[in-house]
Each structure stands twice: as structure tokens, then as C-alpha cells.
Image (cartoon, one colour):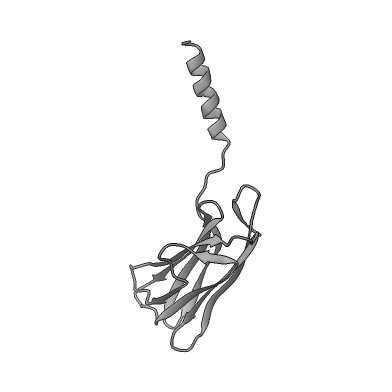
Length: 147
């Protein structure tokens, strides 16, 4: 019995070693000039649960100039918004105070594919700073994958 325990533990550890590590997947990282501010953007997605994916837009300013008021929106087709989530964020990005807009989405029943368009623009004149169209599919096990 004693010799079986180390073998079972070794088999368990080897089985876990080959599993992929989850976490956010970067879709787009860039810096954009927003009036006098330099705005750094990082758009990611992360599969969360069966038929679920979380979209996240991280925004931070380089330097000491705050942005104008910004509006981030996600337009969805074939998704449902989960929890108290919202498909819209608005506000300023002050220096040394990064802002994050996130939304948890579930592919609706009856759909094997869903899409989301993430947009960021200035509130005052609708000048578009970011636009990214994402399409996701659901495999037989219920995992969500970006096309």
C-alpha cells in the first residue's frame, strides 16, 4: 500500500502538468493619443465557465494629463449579460488611477456562435479611439473559443 501512494501521487501530478493554464488572452494592446493625454489600452478576454467569456478593457494614462470623458460600449449578438454587468462604461482616466471596464457574457441557448464589438470613444465628439469585433464559438464541451 505504501508504494502505491507515491505512484498515485506522481500520476496525479503528471496529469495536471499538461493542462493549459487559464487566464486573460490579449486581443489588442496599444497606446492612443487622446487630446493631450497618452492613453494605454489593453483589451482581453477570458473563458470563465460553461458558455461564458469575460471581456475586459484596461485603460491607463501615461504622464500627468487626465483624459476627456470617455465612453466604452460593447454591442453583443447571441450573448446574454450576466449578473449586474453592463455593456456601457463612461468616465475619465486620471493619472495614476487606471480604469477597467469588464463584462461577463454567456452565449445564449440555441446559439453556437456569438459576437461582441468593443468600442471606446470620446464623449464630447464621438471620436473613436478603439473598435474591435470579436466572434466566439462554443465547442461540444461548452468551452468558449475566439475565432
